[in-house]
Amino acid sequence: MITPLLAAAAPATFAWSPKVGLVMVACHLLAWTIAKTTIQYQNEGTKMPFPKLFAGMSHASVVAANCLGHVMGIGTIQGLAQRGLL
Image (cartoon, rainbow, N blue to C red):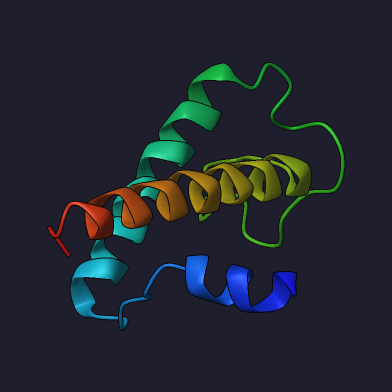
């Protein structure tokens, strides 16, 4: 009984485009900037293979920055798609 109601409530999805990729990249760059400025102990823990490539951050800091970038990117993409800008 509930299954047809849930299927009717699902929003229409949109197709991937280069605009979506650019928005995700921009959100990741912003997340890396936020992580670089706010994480107190960036070099604690396992080191990345090429530290200069990853701004001298440890593995945990890189994972945290990428997680934040994905969360910000998904929210931004969904919001822009809802407004019809993507």
